[in-house]
Length: 462
Image (cartoon, rainbow, N blue to C red; front, side):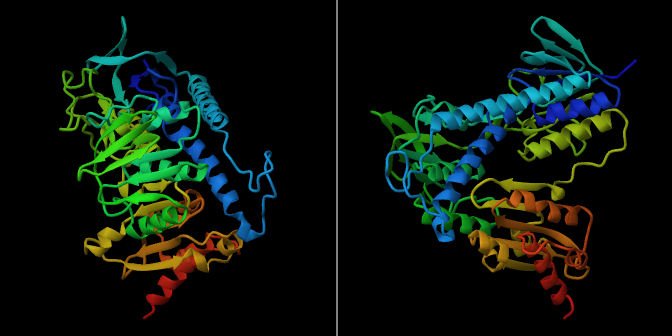
């Protein structure tokens, strides 16, 4: 008899796990409340990156005069004529999200996975309840994701005070968007709406944007934001947000007040673990409500695994998917390698993008990891010059003695596509010599990766 797998949640952690389990011959059921792909596809990652694709195109067109491209006039005869049709943008965002969800449903259904639409809870570690139905399982995977955190007293109303899942219903572009929170989500949306034509004020409780990322990268992005007209309020913490007439007023903890037309709250995530019967089933949660898992996605309850944002390990779709796959490989007796966070490549979809993998500059600066470093500004790269992309750099880290690549940071347009080479180098323990001897196209931005490797190779000779 096939192993019965019940997966609660159809996001990347859930549907990728379902594909692995089905291909290994298991009898798989996925329970999803909102739709295949979960919040990642329907409200979070896919919609936001679709919106950002439009904003990046706007930014490129707006800054194309230096390449000899000028707009002689728009439909109204005004020089420039560049504007965004937000209802059309949002319509495209929603349609693409649902199309992606449908593709996922077709894919998992083709593998024989049963999809149940509804809210689930654990009756015990091997019984999942969905309404009146009871699903018997040999293995259960919890992949319920997370929800935008709400600042008490500043609850989103979907009109003027918003979380990022409510942006795609706006009938018009915000005249003045105040973004509270300068982490990854806040920086991405602040940059996007600035490029689309909104006036943007970014409220950051720290010294600079992206406080948990590479500081050199954060400084580049901050300079770009300010040059494009964004107002940055550093070391400023929001105490509350309220509606004022046709706009909003954000009160800071030092008593200052900032007025705007809309406010976007990006103050973190809380796990979707309440009301699932997890603790009653013996699944341990931490003090913030995240499911505690080991490196093969096991929880404290026998036969119960967890993957994705509900674990709080790293809130990335790629990590959720890998956690889900690892869970199924382990549960079904396949050879499996535990999750290695040092191999995770992450990208911030600002303009320019910020991609990183492996050890960090902070670990090196603190003495935790000894390393040699090379940083090449994008302004020295011939392809970047041709395209007019001069903000950014390629930074590479390697071990002092063996020259093995430890990690790196890329700040550049489409850095998300460029980081793969560094990811492979980190995972396969390549040396800078091996990377340096790899052919790169000339001219290309990726040529800066091989050039950085050559610089480190030369340093090792002394």
